[in-house]
Image (cartoon, helix red, strand yellow):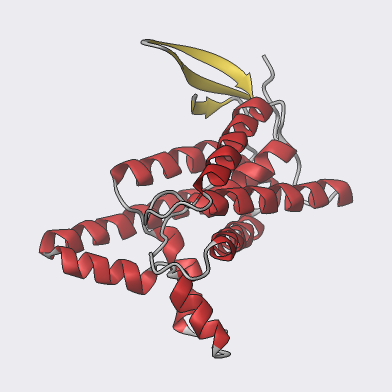
Length: 236
């Protein structure tokens, strides 16, 4: 199931969402340049600007809470491992980020997005604090956005590409089902990855932690009546 668009108009242009998309694109262009000049330069950049759990926990163990290693919790959110990684993340951000930005406001959404990415990174580190493998990608911050969306707009219709063997069909499905299905997959894959010995792979617990953070923040905002007006949700 691949979401393509939602029937959930916004009240104002999603400038922060667009800026994040552009920033990720620019950062990826920089990565491509490093790869063209030699793999060593790219690997060094990923290690320097991605989150390396072992290095971060070691720095914090020395009391260096505001060290350069801590900054990687932010910088890692703009780096991606390849075209599929980048385009998949930006597709979800583009579909769901504009409405969450509309609800939280531009400054509020930027702070929410970056904080969600940090929380997601910490969730992954908590699972494997001694890992020497760099973690990069906007997935955790985007997962936080998805968590907020499912709370704010559970009934919004999302046009999705559903595969049925060799066939596919476009179906309009409530966001609660689309995003709920996505989250269940992350839970199952995350549990399945526990104890795995191979390096690399998908940071499932960053997705889980980010989604949970976003859902809780959105629930608290809804409970207190804060945030901007809800969008006009299409339910046809």
